[in-house]
Amino acid sequence: MYNNQKLKLKMEEQKMTGQESIELIARMINRTRQRLELGRGNIFLFWGYLIIAVTILKWISGYLCYLAGLMPEAGRWLGWMWFLIPLIGCPVTVIQQRKRRQTSRVRSYSDVLSDKLWRFVIYLAIAGLVISFGFFVVGFPIWIIMMLYAFFVIGFATSVQGMIIHEKSLVYGGAFGMIIGGFLTASLIAGLRYLIQTGISPLLIITYIIMFIIPGYIINRKARKVQQS
Image (cartoon, rainbow, N blue to C red; front, top):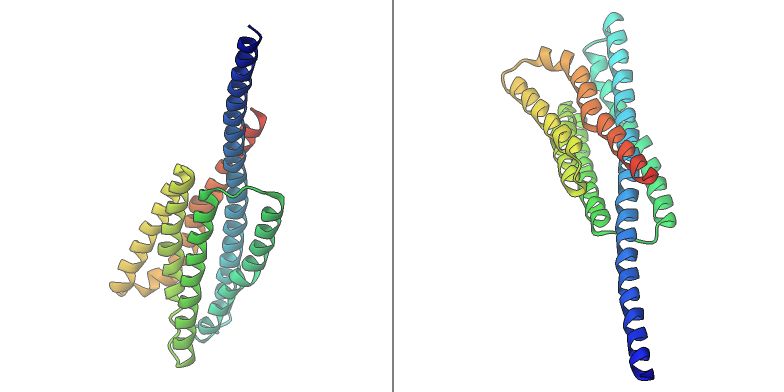
């Protein structure tokens, strides 16, 4: 009888240990998902506002140069203002990623996949900048390549990121960016340079509001609901 009671107690302990393990795994998954949403939401807001701010700054600078009669010569040099985006954004992002890794002990497959995705996007940006700079040196300013990159490449990566974390606003926002990129490419092929010169800045602002700003707020709002529940 004593042996039966001991066996029953052992089975209950094993059952309780299994339940605790499942609960522990569930908590780890929830923490990982919550951390991903908070991090991705904040980083999208940061890059979205940064890109929009630089776009507005360049837009105003171009308009002032036009009023001063410095165009189109000044337009060749205004393209350098786009370098403010990586010069400001990359160091801040690196610092944020280091802080995030120090405070989190668990990295999910989604974390690793997202990091690899955006690292590849950065490599493509570096390649585009090198190509644009090379043509600029020999007298052909083709900064339009980086504009198309901002719509096509980042739009595609944003949609993939949305699929990774199951966030529809990112998927649709990225798709919208690629559609606008297709419209600008068609305008370029059709020779509508005036449309591109006057419309690319407002289209870029609208695109990044839809592609980065709105999803960033949606992701953070969902994360706050998870914390409160």
